[in-house]
Amino acid sequence: MGRFFQILAIFLLPVILVGGLFVFGLTLPVPHLGRDYVISLTLPESGQPVDLPTIYGPPDNSRPLVVIDPGHGGKDPGAVSGGRREKDVVLALAHAVKDRLIEEGGIRVALTREDDTFLVLQERPEIARRMNADLFISLHADSAGEVDTAYGASVYTLSREASSEAAARFANRENSADLLNGVVVKNQSDPVNDILVELSQRRVQQTSREFGELIEREGKGKHRFHSQTQRSAALAVLRAPDVPAVLFEVGFLTNAQDAQQLSSQEGQDRFAQFLARSIRVFFARRSTEES
Ligand code: ZN
Image 1 (cartoon, rainbow, N blue to C red):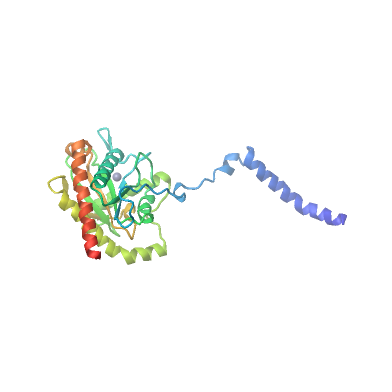
Image 2 (image 1 turned 135 degrees about the vertical axis):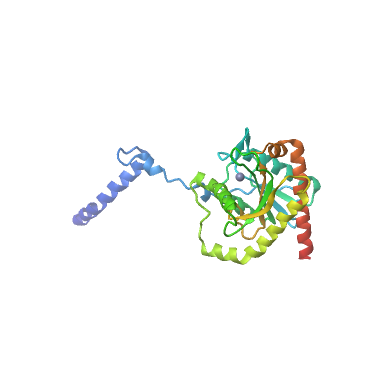
């Protein structure tokens, strides 16, 4: 019996010692391991569930839902020019469009962010998917270095390969917001996701392009557009395979006239008017297609 306890003690002693060290490691600084080493295992931000935003408008799930995504936010200002920050400009525009849609009634609206908070790029289309959105619009503003000659809005839809060098550069810049959090999403390879993308993307992309053309049609004469208005790029924020999605680049902050139009009350009202109308026409068309 005594021998049994001796053997047990021999085996248990190292376990107790290591266990003891581990426990102290968690609670006391250990000179060579260091307490920080033990407790620095924090989860990446994108691993945490995101609270879904508030839905405004009629409390009726049969009504179409548009999710408007003001780009950037928080520690990521986006483009900055003449004291104007992209994150503020697009947030104000998003609120203006939301208010306009609510006022006119019939359509449900949610914003991915309602204030100056940081959202990981990957979370934005994910919010639209989880909310069963019928349309996703990401709002951004552009910048062109010191050049004042670039102006006007463009509408981007998703392409598997960026369709031009400029689009590729743009995709690079907008996608790099992910790197702020050390989370790379643009080359994520997931076989299930790839199949889903293949199956639904063609139809959804066609619908997305139709909405892009509607924006241009409704905005003509009310908003300045770039000479090449419709573009496609490999943008991470548009990767919600089952939700029609566009990235609306509303103009250049580096262009004085664009910046004035996008920042003034009058310009924002006009913007809200034509974008709300585009959304309304889009849903009206879809409902006649379905019935
Ligand atoms: Zn942007």
